[in-house]
Image: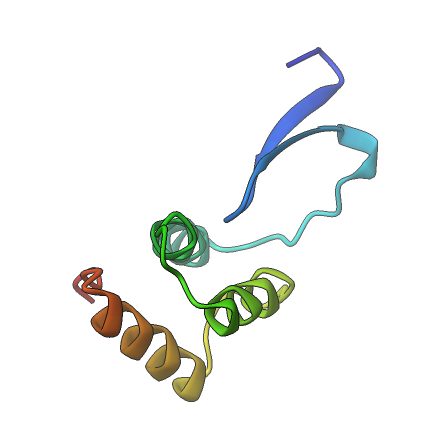
Length: 92
């Protein structure tokens, strides 16, 4: 990581980008924690060897969202997928 660049973690990869190309979302501490937890949940599912293509499509959709939360239906979908694959959902 250079002086004017940083590493960005996503659910599917890590990228080194110039700081000038970043847009601040100005998230609260609670929202940052939630986004970090969501990243972990998405990565666990993405790393499964037998993950269905529909799951990867949903993860791609979630990964493109800029809001720091899941809607109730999104939360339920993610929890159902985790349960189906035996990936434990973090405690709330």
